[in-house]
Length: 154
Image (spheres, rainbow, N blue to C red):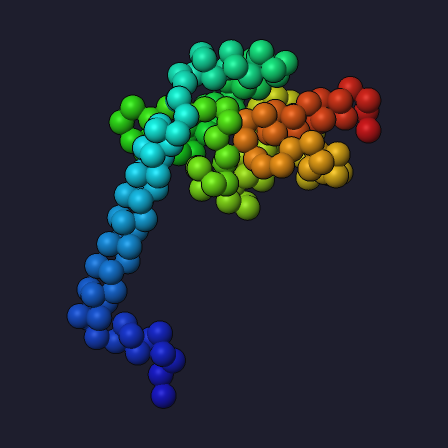
């Protein structure tokens, strides 16, 4: 008796049908995500890169870190719907579909670009108390903690 998965791909027509089904599912998933991003525009104003950085600088965050974060997010979200603009208050999990390993990778890339220690060795309790969800301010807050860690040598 063949394993079930091998039995599914025994017939060439089944392979074609499964391929079409998977392609359609992927297409509709991406289309749904693009619609969700477009719907954000009705909820909050999007900003360009300069405005994004300016908003975060007004809150005391580093311009270089904000710029790198913007670029990392933009690359992660490609392809973006026409005219879509991000906002620092957007929730990375809810709005951008940045999930468990992707958010860790985002933090690692940003820390590396800024020459900061890897966040994996950090005690996150202080950070989790201050920030309730993952957005630009919480990521940049994490970078502040890493900067302090680097300066103190611990």
